[in-house]
Length: 566
Image 1 (spheres, rainbow, N blue to C red):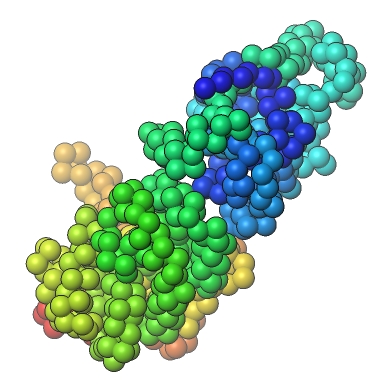
Image 2 (image 1 turned 120 degrees about the vertical axis):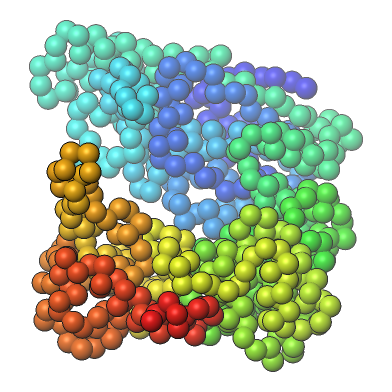
């Protein structure tokens, strides 16, 4: 195995460039680029600090492997549009990056392109550690019109044809103000450091698997195995990425078909992932929900996924339509666990007619989500529910609830549990979707999403004090976080209502006084003005609990409703 070493500037020139050893490209087994602006900036900070950034692993081959370009002008949306970056397959020499994509793509963006339309800049006067982020050299992605001295476009420094001294003098002369001798010296040092870090031939090494002369030396299966072993030891790749890499090697259209189904699943404000789709595939094909690499190594599994892909995706989309139409779950925040959908998709895929005729499917989904049925060890729960569906060849809600109980997950929701599903909980948006059915949960502009707010503002409740038994002073907070954030003190407001000039921290005695009857009916708020006063907060909560139980109890299968509401 060869181990060439080149300057960072030279390595970047290899990317997408067939004139340089056939060019560096990304094989289709690579996942999308996932680093954030901050991670890219930290990489460049590490380089200037002369920290090691590890070696790369590339496969030099003439095999007609499906591959794609590195992205210069990157946008986050491109992670779901990889198919537009593929290049035609050929039998020419090329180098495919097996390990190091995130670093190389970051270098390419910083030195040749942009991130969301912004280019990489260096604060040329930085260079001292700054808590709390432990960054020494300040990098940012910025717009040119917002970037005056000391911000320097980094690619202009790296690719300047001047000497380091000439670059430094140009910066000093055009600073727009008189610099101190210390600042001038720092600029000269930093320019020299940039030249050293990016021009030195010791910049970056890479290990090279070369089968251009002997195709038997590294076969495609060997390379996939090397890719998995190189990436599975750290956190750079998730298991779904590794499993998808195996599927991609045998199915050329895997990337495009995955992008297509995710776009269709997520167009209404949801956030389905490749991880979910792959787990669903395994479950529907009788392989169990648990992720295991060996499952995707089986040619039969790979072939069946490709063969049944249209039926699998049809089942997912049909169930999503059911969810949106029958359960009033209309956005990502309202699904604490997407895994709850897999038993429904399985029944729709295997027993379509029985699923369409099944009753109380919506109750199963709602109560399993609220009951946390898929927390803990979800794969075991999915497999047990699927086994029951196969046994009955039906979607029998009562039998499935029985399976949940056997797994110590109760589908019955007690009122005392409901009250904990308040501000900040995973379940509050699910409850609010059931309750507030006329709100727009999929606005074009994300900042227009409905917002959870406190009826009695937190700031108001924090001012309520009780006597300290030790000091006899009223300095102890009366209402702790659980009381302030409980469901009975929460409501849903439009972004306009909760924005500037809206409710904010206004006390209910002021906010509610001019509201029409319809407002109280919508938000299930007691109409007695005496209850809106801070001194009657506890009575307000009890009165509102009764209203919530009356509305939500029949929907989510609450137990002991009568005694709790009395």
